Amino acid sequence: MFAGDQNGLQGDPRLKAISEAIRVVPHFPKPGIMFQDITTLLLDHKAFKDTVDIFVDRYRDMGISVVAGVEARGFMFGPSIALAIGAKFVPLRKPRKLPGEVISESYVLEYGKDCLEMHVGAVQPGERALVIDDLVATGGTLSAAIRLLERAGAHVVECACVVGLREVKGQHGLNGKPLYILVEPRQQINCSAPSVNGVETCRHDDLILGASFSSPLNPTSKSD
Image 1 (cartoon, rainbow, N blue to C red):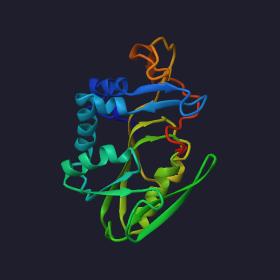
Image 2: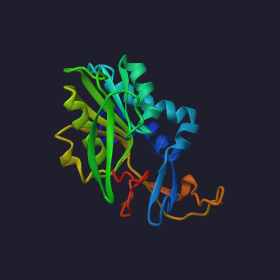
Image 3: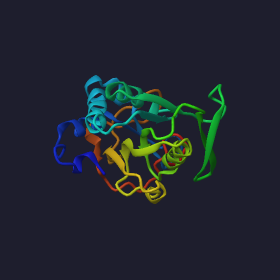
Image 4: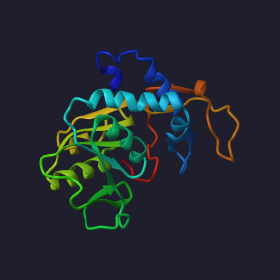
């Protein structure tokens, strides 16, 4: 589900502002990839706050006690959402990052495998959980997060991302869990802005929202 398709948020100017605050960096980290850079969203206080507020408005009355953030950019949104809805924040981390006893869940990437880990005891059986990440493309990482939480006995209510494709290739692998997305990726049309530290970037008026996105979408080599 996209936020803009929801009653009450159709035509909401906050969604357009959030989309425009996300910088697109062509050919990063490798040729053919349109990197959706949310660090520029974090620099925009109002757009960042609007992002968190939209999630909080959606989840505050769902009885969620766990907000699980996927490393690393899920950590940027998850704690604020958790504080606002009265939930705890649980980090789902890459291997060998957590110091205590962990449970782990592997998942397949386009060019290999990866793994998420969670501290034993961080989630109690029966708790209602939300999974948060910045972006979803194929759903591989979110699927692993769902499996990890369910192994601990949690009930995953929903997954939420700031950016996502309208047709997530791996959505069938989300174990039937709903997926809530704020905005679609933007595609570069013309890139006339000057480079920043040698990296070609694009102005807001060089981009469109909801374009056909045929290039691989892979901001961190996690291919999800």
